[in-house]
Image (cartoon, rainbow, N blue to C red):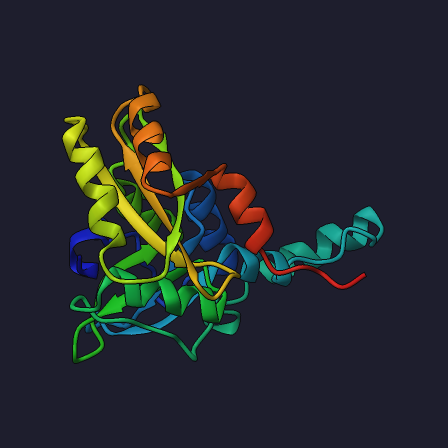
Length: 226
């Protein structure tokens, strides 16, 4: 799946000469957290986030009169004074998987999507990514997530899938992950049914270990130092 399939394209953009007060009003009225800043040729030159807005506001510890005076002054500054200029951007042909890794590594909430000339084409946010993975994994339909520990060797996945198929159960998605144990691997099939008794019994009969998915996650999450 590619970025162009999931990015938001119905964007609200602003120019660099808009005031902070005007931009803040646009963000509030449209319930948006990111405002791309473009020049007259449509080239992306910056972005303003809700965090940028918060950082620009005066301290609430000021006396009321001082706060209001400072706020009025700040609202008349140009958006170019606070926008982020050193942008991290992606292209429409990037994959969703690659983009997810970028967002995780850089800890950003959204990425502007540009063409080869730097013209803004869209924005992909963490919300867009979550929606994409919900659809891809088929978890938007009711069902059951299993966590199956198997030996880390070839053919184990096929055994699991064969059992699910034998029960005539629709498979929404299947993920795998390494376990702490070097000779084990966890398989996570999402089944479009809540009746998984027979599947579980057959999996145990062939030597699989079934554990609660949340327990597996907690056991394999990084532990904070005391």
